[in-house]
Figure 1 (tube, rainbow, N blue to C red):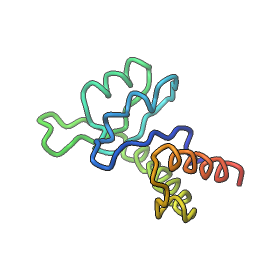
Figure 2 (figure 1 turned 90 degrees about the vertical axis):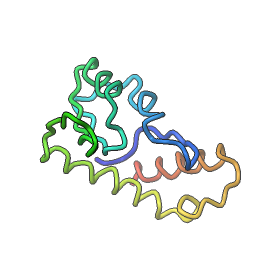
Figure 3 (figure 1 turned 180 degrees about the vertical axis):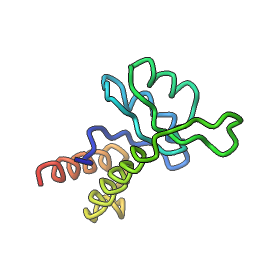
Length: 117
């Protein structure tokens, strides 16, 4: 539990929300748990259309704050734990690879190793 099923690599200057739809493509979970960076009306509507519940806290500047299940949101720590497991691989945390495709390939390899443990 808490292992990644999909990786999408973007530039450091890109917002995470730009890849949100691709991350859940062909997935139909009961819940989508994400941080405030994924708080966008279009993304929340997409989640609801898939009969899933969006457990995404509202940004502070949102006029109407969305209620979330705070106990369920605590499970988001699994995402941070997964990132921590991947950073045990020196090549991931230090990003020695110059090409994005090589870096992504190694992140996927590291993710596979984490799954097999």
